[in-house]
Length: 617
Image 1: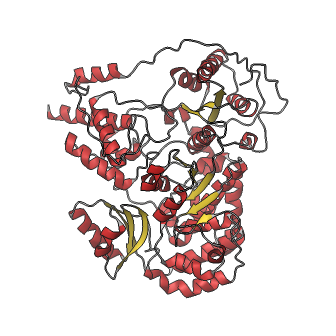
Image 2: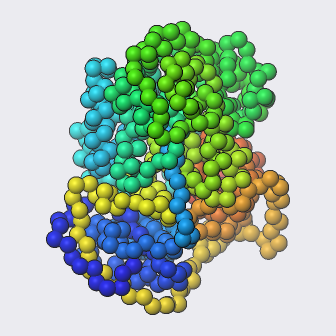
Image 3: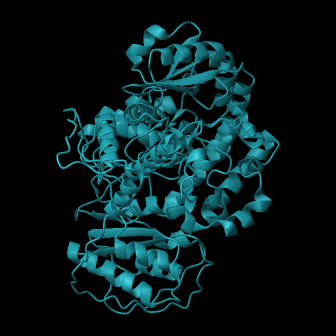
């Protein structure tokens, strides 16, 4: 950071946004700690500070050194407190090499991740994102006869109210848990808007325009992909960015493809925790292998009744499985009924060789110019098995890449981290653009945190584009460097001791806590920017041990995120089954989705045990 005063700018500041990304850097680790303390002190002493201007100043006018730190905050007090306490859930730090020049890969998720109001806050606040959503929706009107924005965001008249009543502090602060609501099985019927969005002829173009708009926003901010991979329908996003089809052509093709599929008989798809070889004997003439997503993660497609019978058989035999949110049996022989008209449709477009390399779902390796420009390839893509696991293995062969999921949810990131090939990669960096539908975190806060982590990894960001057409003012920051003793941070042990005294339940570890032996194939701790915080109590230790076994990762800390480690619904089922055996209490998997760290999950289980104990007493 500059030691001299940064001159004020005459430019007008933007209207305030609810979240801000603060960045710090220094030539040394101790210098970074000093700069952090200085910034916290500056915030405490300047109550009238414009946080947008401060974030802009730190991003644009301060030189980026190798020791880096970020914080996403909502106001001055929030920022000062997080910096002062070095909140390990909020503060992310890295140390990069001089020659660091990591490439970025865009990964586009497929159907099943969509939900009403996905990326709503970006639609409200980010002009680049909104511009591309509006543009795509306008281009789709001749093919859909309605405005897709009305389906994605059905209550636009409430958008300003949602924006004003959204309390960002509540998102980041810990709140009292509503255990009764959280622990109940989710039996809420699907609302009308979700039912409409989930119709294939709407879901496919809707997912496309969200992912395309996100990609354009990332690229506007200077995050350019060196490679691409799309899952199922989202290979069309990759093909469009690579120049195989124009945007207008792709939108027409995706809309017609969805309409053709909509005419087919309904079907179902089942995610199964088995390998392709283990699954083959269970496939009948009415069931087929739709996708291979991992070593023990496959998707089966078929008509509704055979899928239901397979699900019951698997559950009876203790095999984790879950039906997907879909209306048809994609990538199955059922699709062959529309194969000929679809290929004829593709022939009407001018397909060009890709200008950005991307992975083929059909082959699981880099697509060739001949394949990308062959209409029959897109026919095979419609009907054949998605070889996503092979595609991920191909991607992991390139070292030091940042894999960025560009779309709703974190499913692809989970599958990528669970792939065995990731164990051979020293710098694993898998990030997401949007939270999943269970996560109540602000879209913008989540996105800015990801942007910050990309910067932490050494990728250059065009910070000025982050502020749209208007630029914030720079501030005079008296940042002076001096070494200072850092105070130790208190643990939460006292809180747990109080709970133990009141409940009579032993949550604290014994002096001779036996550690569970980890399998030899365990991977080293992932390259996470948040600091490792060891388990502090028995319940956290037991949960961490289970996570380390399931994820095959050493040193999982209490603030490491379930999804960032590679968690998904089937992994959650495995973890929950082990926890229920230990604590003899019913815990639905959704609890992990809403409390995705060891610390949060431990608190929920602790509260549940206390509540059940009081009931018994």
